[in-house]
Amino acid sequence: MENQKSSSSLKAIIAVLAVLLVGSLVYIFKITSDVTAVQTELKTTMTEKESVMMDLENLKTTYDAAIAENTSMSDELIQERDKVVNLIADLKKSNGNVAKYRTQFIALQSNMKALMAENEVLKEKNITLTTQRDSTVVVLGETKKNVEALAGQNEELAKVVKKGSKLTVLNTAGIALKVRNSGKEIETEKARRADVLRVSFTIAENQIAQSGDKTYQVQVIDGKNNVLGDKKTETFGENTLTYSFSTKVAYENKTVNVSQDLKGDDFAEGTYYINIYNKGELVSKTSFVLR
Image: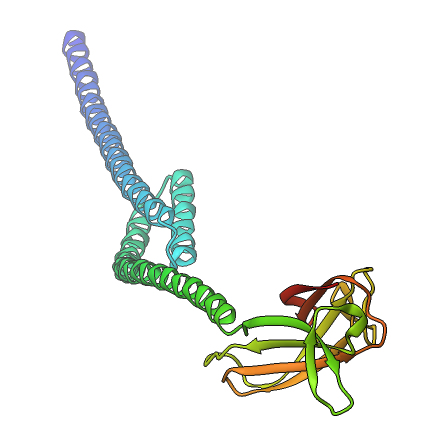
């Protein structure tokens, strides 16, 4: 009887232990499944995070390259690049929902594509403008060379014209004359007989010279190195000239013969020098001798 009670108690204990074992197994299985699910979820989350991070880094690299080209859109590109940088920083700190970062990445990527397309259009325009500018620079360079060449030619031509338009004084001569009471004039080479010194010269024809009144200063110097006549003194620039008389000539681009007398009553013997000046510049000279 006692053996039967002991056997029943043992069976009851075994049954309870079996129930507890099954419960434990079920609990352990559930815990293991939950852990596995969490690990899987974490692994998926980390993989998605890394994927979004890589996409964002690539997006940033694309912006960096575009900004380095220094186009007119650089400021806009920098602003968008900064948004990507901020999102990368936020994602690094995040341990949770990655989906929102993927959504923001897609929006930023869409903006990037639009900006890149616009940037490419601007780059093409810049290339065209640069080509046109370079062509214009070449044309302007050639034009400048031509202008400089023409300027040089004009300067040389102006010099030639100036030189060519300068009046030439020819046939300068000086003689001494004895004037009789009748008014008759007799050329003489003797100083004591001379009453008048006559100076003559010719202004040659010049069709490109400027016509109008021309004034010449005539300087007569005797054998004692004295300036005869009025002995007027005039300054031309830095030079001072003392001359015997001046004569005004109406010049009309034709040959003009000029003659003027210098009176005196006591001419010295020796060599007489005649110098013809125009505005202080010596244009002709000659000499003669009185005995």
